[in-house]
Image (tube, rainbow, N blue to C red; front, top):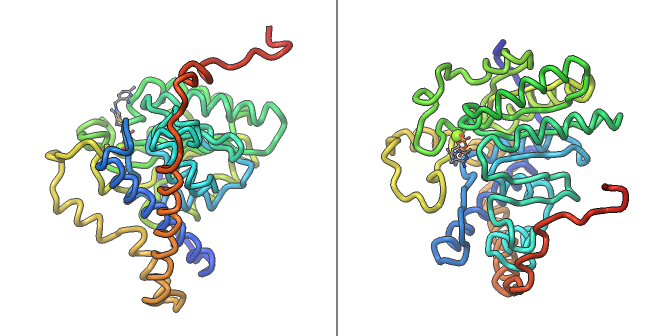
Length: 338
Ligand SMILES: Cc1ncc(C[n+]2csc(CCOP(=O)(O)OP(=O)(O)O)c2C)c(N)n1
Ligand SMILES: [Mg+2]
């Protein structure tokens, strides 16, 4: 059921905003990596560099009251959702002023106020949660949708099949407005999709659960937006799940601690870099007369200024107090819970 995607133009002003957002996210992550190398960021750090067009296109297609679930490669979603970059950087630094008081770290960002329901380290573990959340949204008679980002590797977990079967089934009753966004970045750690998936045309797997699906170019925010916008509108209208496989690439290592990448050729990374989402968008905007050298520099400088502000905040923030070790471990029982 894989369709070819055609996309008409998005407004130049919108594209310029998306460009600005992608530049900011990239600067933020490049800084996060530098901080990791300096030993300022502990634990894991998975960078999204190369995949920015997917987050921008998808978040551009949903409403502010829609909700989002994601894996551990999660910085872009919260930043684009409007979470304070200082709180995100402080979270990576493990500081008490962090988004999750320094207790979640890079993989477990969470911002309920802005509809971001995490940040999960267990591959595929968030899928059952997202299906349940989508069901809850419709059970409450609302018209919000739940967006769930997942990697190609997550599609080979048992949780994927169990969750998606329920999503398809509940969708028949109009009770699962779930938008599944596969970010096929070609690898799960060091294993390529053809080496790990019996059927590498991943979107087709959704057919098994009666979930309509499409494939799109994940290096182009406009292409992502156009296809996802249709899917979101459809899920909102019908209460049925919908899925897209975005074809994208991560330039960075799987995690910042992985220095060797023997599983792929440098030339392959270079080839994908030719289609860098930021460079491509910049070209398009220059062509439309909306960007020139001075504006490109100004946008980069502004991104860097905001990132350095976030770093200054994170560095100046205190570590969590030792007595905080046992707080926020369990939820508080409320009246009527038992
Ligand atoms: C259940 C489980 N199995 C294995 C791992 C180890 N692991 C961490 S990331 C990863 C690869 C996942 O690949 P993918 O879903 O494609 O996401 P990507 O890293 O490419 O964004 C694996 C196997 C894990 N975290 N959880
Ligand atoms: Mg992957």
